[in-house]
Structure formats: structure tokens, C-alpha cells
Length: 177
Picture 1 (cartoon, rainbow, N blue to C red):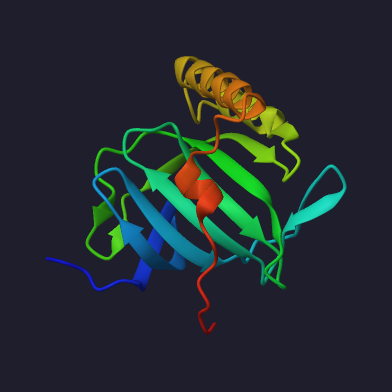
Picture 2 (cartoon, rainbow, N blue to C red):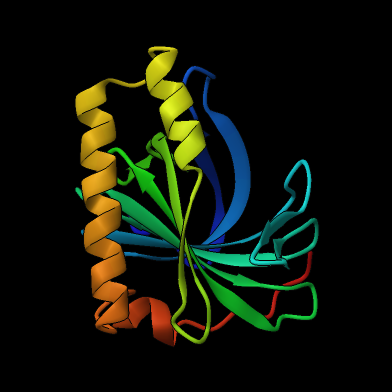
């Protein structure tokens, strides 16, 4: 069935050991290899990196979810729609992008990367990954794979090979919220 875009979608996001949380979004594009979803952010508390608030209630993100990749990418904007940078979650690869009107469940592997508009990269939540392994939420081998992916993505970012062009070129859609 062909979808008329944009259309509402639910993002299913799981952070072990918790069940998947549901986040509303607007599906902007779907291909065999990726989804593009725009959403308002509503974190429990504002997220800061290097002294800058990068995510707070009312901020925006364009999410890029990829088939068979170890990451998703959010292109983040503040409430005035000023671009702030790229937020990259390390996730278990998914084989199927959609399940009905929801994404397949994205399983967070705790490590994240923040890339500023100036190309500075920050690896985030290493302490959370260590805790997840210690509590048995994820295996040591899965944690090692997450760390390997972070190293590769940071290296590609420094060479200006990451994020992909489709992410860099994306602009927010004007939508009512």
C-alpha cells in the first residue's frame, strides 16, 4: 500500500531494560533503506552538551532511521527552528523499517554522538553503557560493537564523510503542532 506523505507515524524506541516508548512524528519519506521523520522533542529534562542546550520541550528533530545500520541520526533544531547539530544514537540494526503505522522497535545501545555545526564531535553516555553492561541489560560483545561503531562514525565525521548528504540537506517542513 502506497502512503500519502507526510503522514502521522509512531516511533517505537526501547532503552533496555524498559519496554518501548512511543513518540509521535510525521513520516516525511520512506525508501527501502531509510525513514525520514519529523517530530517535536519532549525530553523529561533538557539535554546539554558542552554547556549548550541541544534538546528541550518544543525543540524539533528530523530523524533518519536506516535499515541494517547501527545508528539513527537526528538533525536538531531549537524552538525557533535554528539548526543546532546532529544527534546520533547507536542502536541495534533493524531489518524492517515499518510495522503498520509505527517504526520497527529501535533498541538503544546507550552510546550517542553529538556533532556541532562546526564539526566538533562529542561521545555521550559512556557511563550509561558501562552501567548497562554491569547490570546485564546488554552483553559485553554488543557493547564492544557499539563502541566500534562510535569510533568509526567519529572518524568519518572528522573526515566530513558523516552524516550522509540526505541528512545534511534536509530542512524542516512547516507544520502545525
